[in-house]
Amino acid sequence: MCRNALVATEPFEKIMLARKAARDWRLGRLEHKFDVDMPDVPGRPEKPELISATKMPKRKKGGSLKMRIAILHSLAHIEFVAIDLALDVAGRFGALFPPEYIDDWMSVAADEALHFALIDRRLKQLGSHYGALPAHDGLWQAAYETRENAAARLAVVPMVLEARGLDVTPAMVERFSAQDDQVSAKILTRIYTDEIRHVGVGTKWFESRAHEMDIKSEDYWKTLVTRYFRGSLKAPFNDSARQKAGLTRDYYMPLAN
Image (cartoon, rainbow, N blue to C red; front, side, top):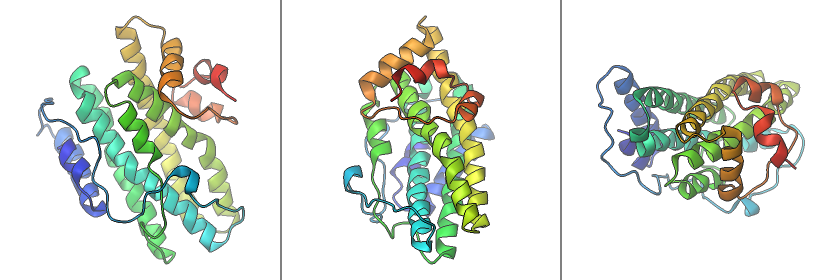
C-alpha cells in the first residue's frame, strides 16, 4: 500500500492512495509486513518542473498576490513530497519497528495529504494551481541519501528539514495575516500545529532507535546530521515549538550557525 501511493504520479491519485493506506491500516485491514521494495524515486507529475534549489527564483519581500502564490506553491510542493516521505519511512523501515511506528507514520501521511489538498485548493482560489511554478526536490534527495539507514532518515528529514518549518511558519502566518489573507493564514496555522506532532514522531522513534543501540540520542543525532545533511543548521530557532516536539536545544544548538 505504501508503494502504490509512492509510485502514483498524479496528485489526486497519490492523495487518495495515501488516505486509503492510512485508513486500511487504522481499520486493521493490512498486515505488519514489509516484503516489497520501496522505489528510489517516487512518482511525480509532469509539472511542476523540478530544478536545482540554487536556480529557484528568489522571492522578494512584500505581500503581493504574486508573492503569496509563490509561497503557497512552494509549500504545496513541500507537502506533496511530505506524503511520500511519510509513506517511505513507513514502508522502507517498518520491519525494524513495532506496529505503533506504522500507526504514527500512516497518520502523518494522511495529514500531509490533507495539507497538500488545502493548499492546492487555496492556490486555485487565488487563480493558480500546483505545477504552475517550478520547484526543487531537495527533500526527496535527503530521503534518497538516507535510504539505507533508518536512524539517519529520522535524524535528517523530520528532525532537521521538517523542524525548519517550525522555525519559519509563524512569520509566514503573520505575513499573510498582515495582507488580510486570513484563509491562507488559517491553513498555515493548521499545518504548523500538525507539524509539531510530526517532528515529535520523528524524534520519538529516533530516540527509540538510539536507545536500542545503547547510544546517547543527542550525540548520535549530531554524528548522523554531520554525515548525511549537506546544509547547515541556521538560527533563529523556534525553541518553544521544537521543545513541544521533544527536540531540545541539546540536539541542535552546538551545530547551529
